[in-house]
Image 1 (cartoon, rainbow, N blue to C red):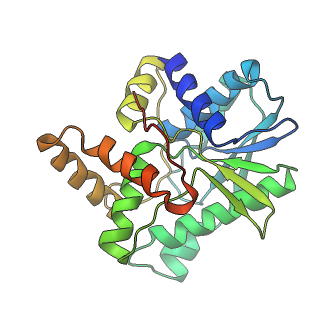
Image 2 (image 1 turned 90 degrees about the vertical axis):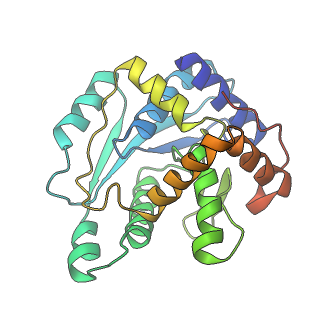
Image 3 (image 1 turned 180 degrees about the vertical axis):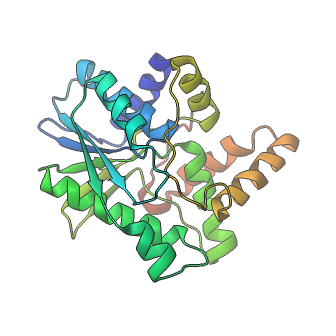
Length: 243
């Protein structure tokens, strides 16, 4: 199953010219199933992609007491990759100093900023996130229902302030296929310790889409195809194929 993951990632990398010779890529690893699989895939992609590149795994420790650092270290050591764990006080800022009622947006922004700063310190010119097809669709829906606009993230984004290019090589992969692959590989998610897990706006949108998909099994493919055809946020028309 990992081979199918690699094939879809390679197609996204080629379609959007994500990787070039000489790149050093910061792979964002939260410890969840998506980012663990992304890191494993990068380890294998490095062996057969024509582009010659380096990568380093970066984890942002948000400062939650229940963060399972030992399990994350065990995972990193078991696959023999370079890694860096950046300790922060983001949890204290978001949940104590700011006491945010809806903390996810602020937490996410601060976490991304910390990762970009770490990437720059480690001489990386690119960063890779494990956003998959479902993330694209959910962000598209959230922007309309909660913000009143049509928006989702781009496969490739240039961050001018940090001079970093952000890439998302898993955009052609459905979350369900990631679950199946992770289960087959025997990977275990590493908990962040965040008290808001499972209660976010994104979770509500995910449940809404799943409910609607019972009536229309092609819902996700239709939405993803619409995003590509509309060229939202730099997206260009593609075939929208998935597993």
